[in-house]
Length: 305
Image 1 (cartoon, rainbow, N blue to C red):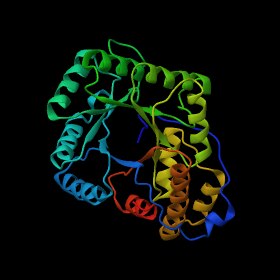
Image 2 (cartoon, one colour):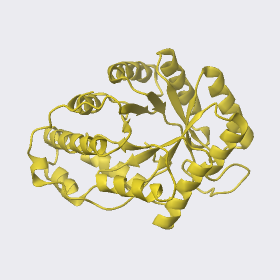
Image 3 (cartoon, rainbow, N blue to C red):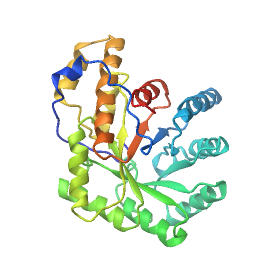
């Protein structure tokens, strides 16, 4: 998840039939690539489970797997281990690289290590600001600085992915300010972008139209968060600034502890949104798996992958 970098915005009304209609027939999008995000595990058992999860998701021929990393290197060893496992399994791997709290020398040393491992894809992020520190010190303060640093030092050795916020970053002073930050990352040399998760497809299309009007031509891939638990979803959304449309929030709340009904509704809603995104021009989908394959696999299968 891009919560080390987040979002927040409007709601849209899904047609009423979306609440009760069966899932749409499989639709093939062979040219639209998928990617899957994981977070580092802390135990041998978690590592083994993640191997099985990646194996299950590998059937969808992902463009890459990615792995998150805590700001300031707080989960660096776990990220390095996960990226090494992904590469050993034969799938391109993209580590998250949050620059906040890291000196340029530290960033360069980590990039050198990734390069020696065979990494060719980086998700360049600012990252969460550690409590009580602020944007100061000798390191970089913004993702655009990191992107420019990578381009200057490594040329085209890395494909650089950056974050986008269709509902805007919760720490942005305004929508215009957020847009300027995104454009600055592209101008610094970003190759493509992954969005924060959302449940309002119109927010994504509006964002893409807005940045296209500012000369941005890079692919902008929607970030997709399957819904397994309303309480967890609410927590993530509050942290990341992503909006849960009112109708969906109320419908999920009405199910209480009925997890089967929550998952059934959520699968229909998320699958329908993904289908619309792909039909109307999104270049692919990036799934926030939370290290789980079940719901993600079902959505991908419903889409015909």
